[in-house]
Length: 167
Image (tube, rainbow, N blue to C red):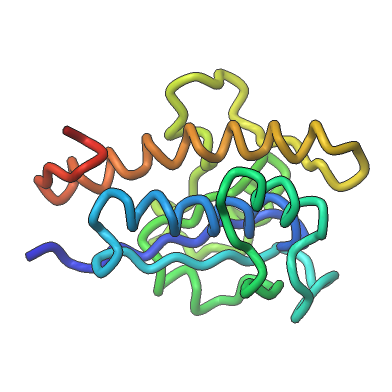
């Protein structure tokens, strides 16, 4: 039996990119048959939107692809997260730098960029769609969906599993 893998997705305000990643990954994990073995959350490096639902545009874009983000609420990362989670995945280099600055040295290996798991995107930054149009939210979904598959493969490899998505 595999141990529970805990994943935290992090962006700036926790209303666009990181809740999108949480919602997408939640569904991908279920499809892979790993639902009981993976814990997923998201947070922001800043306290701008604590308690607020994801941006309506992020919810609309996700909904069009079958993902429901409506139950998610913004929160800020805290010191306990660095110990509690196995993967702390930043959406871009700026949030990665903030996380690395806050993270105790013995947990630094957990902090990475989400797109380090991507198979198709070479730029490791998921761009913030907040000030742009609808296309930005679709681009975020494309990037997150791709990285989610790579992350599931990493979890499978780490735990020696063959799941529905890795067959």
